Length: 498
Image 1: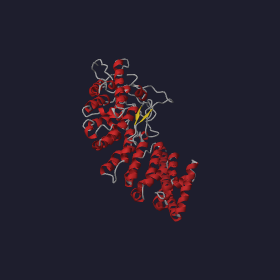
Image 2: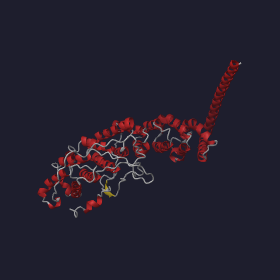
Image 3: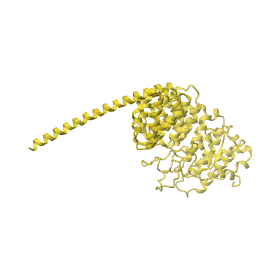
Image 4: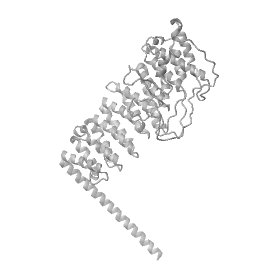
């Protein structure tokens, strides 16, 4: 057995190497090395590197996933190798090996049942090696599909341990799955089953059913990034192969988002689910169906609300821009939602929201701007006047975008809509902001609108001056009233003492 399995062992080491099938290349299989950190298909993924060397934190106690059964495990028997067995007996032997791999071990005690654990892993590796070529995949017959799905389900479909109340996904290291040496190879085997051309979708959908899809989606809450990476690839493959399950999968994902946004604000796999959705949205046909628009408004846009939005914002922003690229009219509810869920108390989140907003504005046309210019420009005025210089600076950087300045919402064509709203904070920043970059950028923007329309600029300056004078008069009257109240109080106090 050792000689036969060397190739697979090199691909599947216990430290977490696995087959990574890119979401954007459904017909390509790559074997990438990856340790316990897991792999990511989107750069700078917020859940990428899980190992941290800069901070030493106490390791949280592992609460196992409920895989181990409270039953006595019978001694497993060595079975002959598949390649050493005649073709007539091979399917029956394959079925026996699937039954052997359906035995679940307790990994809380690493010293218990070592022989059984090793035998199961060796058998799983043999199965993966056997189906790793088109000839071996001919064994994926309908008669074996119930046994295949039973083995896969009993290994991976399990209840995840509850998270501790003090768990912070942005700070704490994830707790890795202790049974990964078995789980990983089961995932590899199932990936080869799903992508195999020998597996007919019309036949297999009876076994890869909606209940199984729901179990897969539930597992995305696993703390182990290696497992979520496999789940991401598997769910995407299932979505592509089984067209009858597509609507159900989208609804199940939206239900995960609803619970995350409105109830828990805790879920480990939002980023991975959004990666899958990015590929799904890219394949939506035009015009967009009402179901897809509803998914955008009810499921995606509210994902800007949770406090941990920075952990998955890159994937969320990609999904959002995919919608606007397909249908610019979707920019209206998106911008309204972004303004509604704006993170006023966190400057770093405001900056990444502005990055996303710039991408949306580039794709938006004049028709959409007419519908959304009031909340957009009122928000922009507040961001320009922010007490945090990075927010103000990032807002001013919008005018460095040539498309927005020449043809977009910041162009001369729309100056009459935007300048009366933003003149005030621009004027204040240009007079002497403590940050010289902000001051210089504000002066440049004002000069730009002076060149656009001097009459409009003078009108805005006059209205701003009158407004400031009115505010000064109101404050002066309030100050005078307080002086009268203080004087009356002082006179009463002196008369009472006399």
